[in-house]
Length: 176
Image (tube, rainbow, N blue to C red; front, side, top):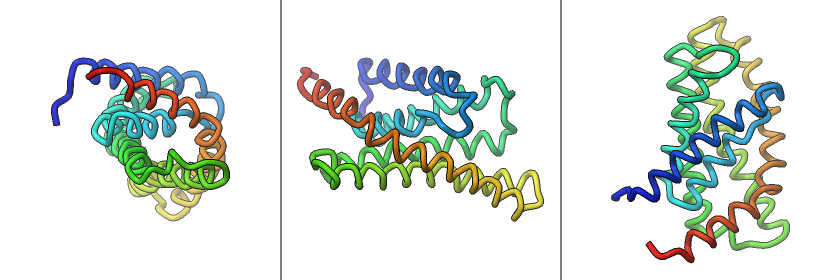
């Protein structure tokens, strides 16, 4: 797969959006648009582009956020977990779930939100609990925070998907 300059700029813009919107929601605990932006990137431009948006955007956020940088192990888990949303978006597009209507579409988007959230928080929570100990109490607290993110993503994905669909249609209509 070759990455054209146009796609490189789109990846850079979306990675920057991940960072900027993370700042914008930094005071809302575990409510953010990272998952949706990475999912959208994967849906519109494919799994590789979506993964790069997640890796770069989360790399920026985890190092340059108002609470200070994460340690290396947690940072790596966050970047890998964020990158996992790109393939979820690509699969969602590949099996044509975005073409559905009504509750079928909403259900698919909620499942995609759950997949993106779990793909991020499970490795992050495991690494965080392993590094900071005691494992089980730390992991359980991480799961509680994950549930907040699951709830917010279950609302964000269906609410904002029309923007994704519009971007996809616009990108498909452009000459390459």
